[in-house]
Length: 132
Image 1 (spheres, rainbow, N blue to C red):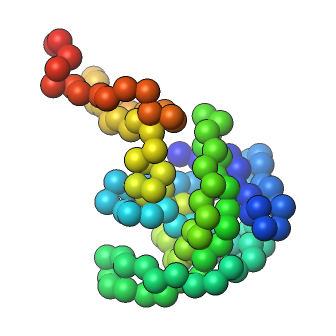
Image 2: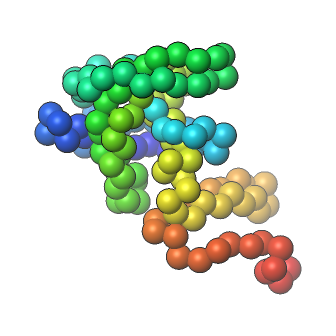
């Protein structure tokens, strides 16, 4: 998924369009969202301090940035105190701090896997209770 805009409220800089789209990974195993150093450098974000983070390889302290994330469907999220860290293969990791605000579903039909996200949450989704 490409993120269509990301801005830093503290700096007032906005990146929109093909030149500044960022690739995101949705990670239900991640408690918080993080941004890559590439995002930090591209948007010239201002560091707002440090925050402790826990990741697959242990614990660390990471710089933190104030950003606002807009998804391709137009839904926007303030991600205050978003850590910046080294990410490989994508620019933004979207964690449960964003995912749990809405409805998130993954389906697979005819060999095509799809995921869908809507905000705000509108209803509980229970595939077990739906007729075949």
